[in-house]
Length: 474
Image (cartoon, rainbow, N blue to C red; front, side, top):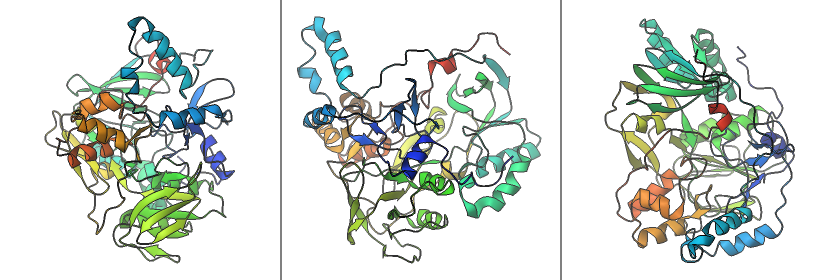
């Protein structure tokens, strides 16, 4: 097992493009706005591209460079569409009923939805059935420690990890190499490149998708070590290419994918600012809502992020206090603990922190332990992390601005399920990972109940080819 940092070169199309100074990789679905990778880990789904052979892929998950963007007149169309609410079609395109399918096909053609590949993906692998006493989901340091403790107690443990290597975030953190070297050799039974996409049968079975096909796993106890997502607050300009999360930044620094001449700005709480500085990267400036560690450059503690500015990519931010600060890359250092498996296991959602994050509380229907970043609690800060803006994008996948959600709530769609259906927020391929916190914040500000939409499998987009395995079970 390789315990060192990744090779000192870009390894994905998204990292290669960034190293070459290209931030915009894709177009947004409805408004044709330029979009770049935010997470560089596959979950935000903002870098969905078409490859030269017609296949659809995420630029952060493939090394093949995508086709170049050809926006042209579609960007003008997007500016016109931005003046209409997401539900504009209700009063215009539902009558006569006989033309609804025609209208739907025209809308899809005008959207940025990619054309389906002409060649079907090959079907490989077969269905498997397996069982264990303890299922550990997540192979970071916390997951490895939990699996080791369960094995020491004589339990039958299986650990599954979505990435190609164990160690999680620590693989990209130089300061964690010693801890990683101690943890990985005692790895035990595990499956790599395997997604746990949901719980079934009263949360007693898990569906795993891996290189050898789907696996239906029966288990008795669950350990959730799925980490956290980078949290994107709802400030004006939050969809500009060049805005990335801290975990993405760590990956990019480890592969030397950031041009050395770029001005990199950081907005983070103190814990994430410490982690960012530990990468050894140089920052043009650092800001955050609370206290900050000492830095060599300008520092703006107790500052609120007001907006990001730029045409086609981020070029500067506005802080209060701090004013306008230029940057070629903006790193956002806030965390949203993963919550999907906990919700499927019976817990409920609550909202806390600034920016608002979704936490899970209550009893689960199965024995369950949550460890590591998945159990993070937001820290308190002196000021708001970011100023909410009606122009900010609440849902990047479906091009829903915060003002759209506020208008829908004012019209009576003041329940999370109604809000989702009215605006489309939370129905995109990221499946709410980027927007659930902002959706719930809008409802809370309007005095409405805070609850998540029903969290169902599949927890990540999965191709039909990955599910269409041989029925011969093993």
